[in-house]
Length: 239
Image (cartoon, helix red, strand yellow):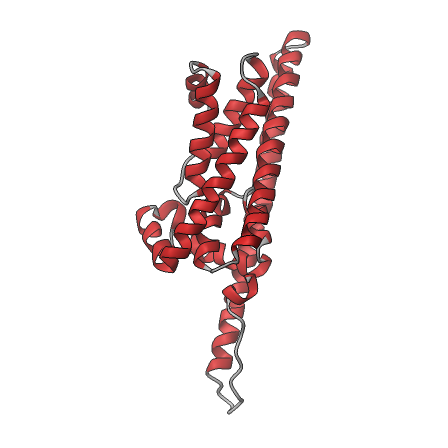
């Protein structure tokens, strides 16, 4: 992140806004890029560089997130599950079969709320648009969740980092580097805790989906002569 921040520092404000929007927009289409790192770096710059506006950074991030997710939705709706499989083969580390199954499980569990909260989770931030399109989520519902999540994430992240950066700068002037180190440790610890809880939620969602699939198989292939029953698909649950 230090490299990204140092590089952004050499650019004019308008170029920074454009880069923030383009990187986040491309990430939201389903291409793994460090959108959150770019946003955090730009927000920190806004706290220390007078010519960079946090409002400009936040607006660029929100526009990139909403437009990128919408493009990803359109592509996912057109390409369907085969498109997700192709993305998985091209980016196995970020979009492999395990990640696709987890994302689908979260959509099945949370419906369109997965689009809103997915903006705050690295996996779903990349997959929310294409996955929603592939699952044929109604676009009106998708757009509401997409816009809401994009605005809250973009402005919330920008101004949280902006405020922390301003406080850190003041601490450096009034106290010492030790105070900044303490703040960094606290921030890293909070981030780790949030990601740890997010991973636990993902694991729980995947486990629930696995149990549901096994249960559906038992219903579809009864061993005791019971009548067949149909379990609602993920598309039906999110639609």
